[in-house]
Image 1 (tube, rainbow, N blue to C red):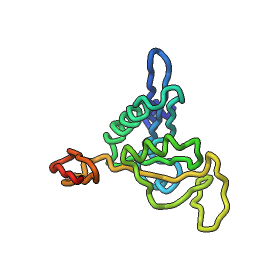
Image 2: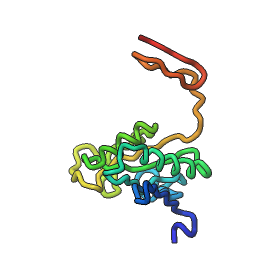
Image 3: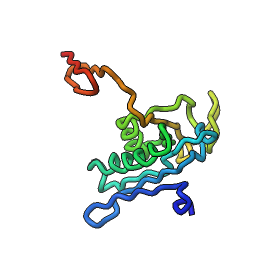
Length: 156
């Protein structure tokens, strides 16, 4: 039903005739700090273990971001904190997604300082990414060269 009314978009990666992973994007965040906003959210993301580290996850996220950019300048997501989410945490950061600063959430409630919670699938942080060009003039990479945007900076 959500796909029919275009409130959820599903992207599936196939490799050699096998499903390698998927990502879903909901038009409006359903939980966490973005719930009251009109911002889209990556609601489910999975690349099956044997297909990881082949660029499939990045391609899936790019597809979701491209779709989200049609109706928003920001995309959001929540990611679990236990080790099982390590690969997802890393790819989100590598792709420019940043924590929103609201801290840790457990069972869709913001966890206050000193409050107890359980490190399971319901413990997460929320993140967002600006999908529009930020017009950055300079990037500096210490120990190498990077050609991004308008300037080239090098520092040995």
